[in-house]
Structure formats: C-alpha cells, structure tokens
Length: 276
Image (cartoon, rainbow, N blue to C red; front, top):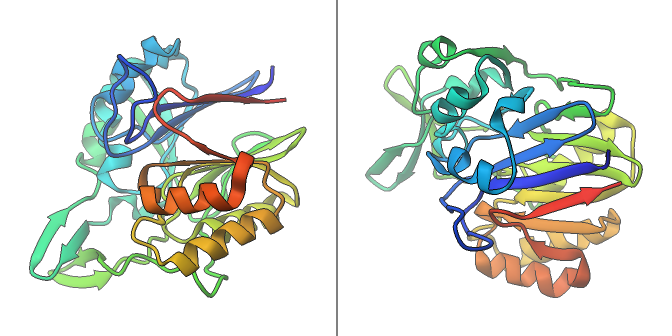
C-alpha cells in the first residue's frame, strides 16, 4: 500500500461540509499502521473523519507534535473513538504554556490533565529522543537549532512556580516516514524551524532525499528574508512537494508559492496525498 497522508483538521476547509479550525491534525496510513499526528483544537477531527472516509477506531498510535491546545484540544473526542491507544510525545507537553503580548496573557497548553486522558484509554510514551514506531516511521525527538535565520516565537512562555520563562519548545517535533521516493516529513508547527527539522530528520534516518514536506511551518509574521531563505533551503534539499498549513500565514505562503512553483500546494482540511 502506498503511503497516504490525509489532513483531518486545519485552519481552512478544502471543500464544503468539512469543518476548519485553527490547529492541525494529520493522518498517516501505511500498509501496517495508522498514525494520527495531533488532534486539532476541538471537535473537527471526529466530525471530519467519516466525511473523509476515515475510521478513527483504526488508529494505532497518536503522536503529539507539541503541547499547545490547537494540536491537543481534540484529544478527548478522538479518544472516545479510538479507545485505548498509545500517545507518543515529549515530557514537556505538560508544561504550563502561555502566549503573552505585553500585559495580556493566555493559557495555550494542553486543556486536559494527564489523568483525565488516561481514564479515557490514553497510554503516554514520553521521550526526549526520537521514537521509532516502525522500521520506517520515527518521531524527530528534540530538534537542534542549526540555522542562523530560524528562531522561536519570543511571545511564547512557560510558567514555573509563578515565574515566566521563555518557552524553548523542546517538545516541538515532527513525524518522519521513509518512502521509496525519499522522506515524507509531517510538521506540527515547526516552532524550532522547518529547515532545522528537516536537517534533523535526515540525520536520524540517514536518508538525504526529502520528497514531501507538509504541515505548519510557523512562518506567520516572519520577515521576507526568513521566508526566502526557507524557500531556498527547501530547493537546495530537493524537496518535491511542499504543502503548507496552519501557522504558515498567508503572506508567507504566497511568497513560498512564488519561489517554489509547482512544488507548492496549500495543505488544507480534506487534502489527501499518496506517495509510492
């Protein structure tokens, strides 16, 4: 069976009937495994799944790209459909995460307790290292910052013992799949940099060729220079398909489209691609 990647939830609805909401959820289907990366912000995934021909009870694993509500808020409703399931993530998903603009602050962490989710059948595997789900599928683990132009959003914080600390987003991770065409990399938000993530994927898999990249690139509000350098890096890496979602931002997406040409597409709710 070819690799099939279906976006169950994203900011924009790709066609009528499906729901869109700020966040992301992507289903990866191979011959042997069905893996869900993230669960969207609330109710969109269980609503959209049957419309898109997806039976959530067949999910074998859930991977959380990081501990923000827009990627984890659908967990309760998804678990109601999956039943008992392993959830793979970084220990920092349970940090008290906030976004701050001046004196305004908003909690943006996981909206449920670990105990609530475990009572619904969640079994957490928390690791800072890459987790190999099969011989061909791996999470990136902690992603080193190696480029000079990618940086973490300075408005993101964690609160520890009443003290505000900049959030290093060590829990940020992607899902990487080896295919016959090269790597397919599914980004959650790429808070630690899309290119940093792709380079790390190459390192942990030993595969240089990257065929497909989809998901959030966190270029929303990025400078034109950063977007152009990202586009150049994607071209230098030889990526054949780049489908942007969620936190890319429309201005940055348009600039990427101009630079990448036919390799570019909008990866919205309902988008489904296959890779041999």
